[in-house]
Image (cartoon, rainbow, N blue to C red; front, side, top):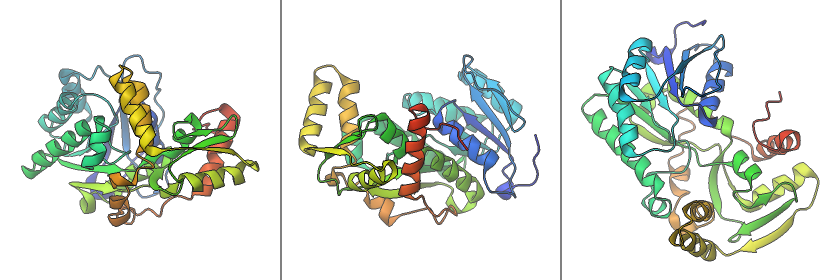
Amino acid sequence: MSTHTVPNGIHAVLILGDNRLATSIISSLVHGTDTEARYALHQAVHQQSLASATADLTIHPCDFSAGSLATLFGQIKPDVLFSTFSGGSLETQRTIIDAAVSSGIKRFVPSEFGQDSQNAALQERLPPLKGRSQVIDYLKELSKGDKIEWVAAATGTQLDQALISGNIGFDFKWQSVTIHGTGKEQFAASSTNWNGAVATGILRHWEQVKNQYLYASGLVTSANACLDALQTATGQNWETGTNDVEDMVREGQQRIDRGFPDAGMFLLEKSVLCDESLGAMKPFQQQDAKEKLGLSGEDLASLVKRTVHDFKHHGKGDCGCG
């Protein structure tokens, strides 16, 4: 594994998890344009993972118990630890953090890279965000005692995946869309690859951003803007329907009350993008951290064009084409 001196004294990087976020982080650190930094990359995965080692990446099967984490941390001695586990209770996340502190790991990046977990209104709409917010509170507490440094980043909706999956109302197969609200409501969004760019920026600028919650979406857009970009990219006019935001929130809550939490949460997550009463856009606009991270943002037309390409080739994002 070829490495040499890197900024901020960060050399060994350990990523916990095997998912799109982990892949994005690893890809950016390996293939990014940062010619000055070459990290010793390690990835901890479950025993059944199909992840394989490369010349740039060492794979470590792990059951993620406190004991196995302590052993792994002792072997690698990472300078920074990324957790990409989006689920799990606060106690699960604390197990990872406590093992890191006990092993002397000085830097930790939790699995944010999505909606803003610090927004109280969003926490009420999307209860899983409360658990993520508690993780941030725990890290803040530890950092006050100089036990660990941390950086967390909200990057908004993962737009490429949300478009292809239909989760925000766009149907690629039938080239139709249901617009919730007016379609003009703005929301923060990013491509999957953008998360890796943010992670790289965090490592490059650690001393400037440590112990901060950052707002670093690739772009700000709206349903109408996405529709325009899709019609341009496909060369077709899309069929458009509309739906009321309040009705969507009401239906989502009713599904949860009837014992269908996944179906209900699906609608509530979608409502976040078009419900301006939540104030979700304000911190992304007023506390934009892209400049701190040395990033300039993403272009909607380019993102949508790549997404249409991926769908045509494989019916999903991350098709792997050059």
